[in-house]
Image (tube, rainbow, N blue to C red):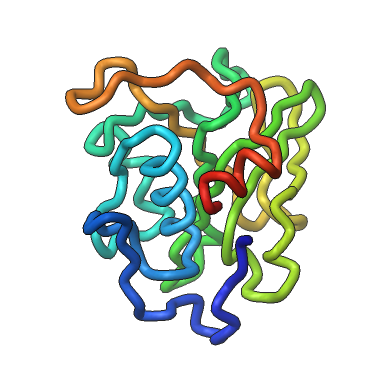
Length: 178
């Protein structure tokens, strides 16, 4: 089950590890995607004390390929990709990152954690409008625009990228403790 800490700070200050591998601060969105990639793909993409907004620009360091979110883009997001926002541009903003769960011609659905720091974060499905290969912002009013998405690279030195899963069902997510 995905829940948040409810502390109001978006930061539990508790380090989370899987079998001794650091995956982030408990309940943060980056911890969620790091846990998913380590559990499902066997790929450690965590980088201590990096924020969600840093993921896009450090993609290659993590063995990921970045795709810019633009109307003229030729690459669509796929299930298992990471959707990255740099946030709303305010000082101290840390951005947001989520896992693409479903892709249709009109929208995508993401799984994520600690979006609003409210009990609504428990819902795994979060729908975002799509026009072609352009993905609209995480929230209304154009705040939290999507910078792009990241995909596990096929040339990663420590793992071979898996084939794209056909779906991320609730049972599959639960099976990976996400």
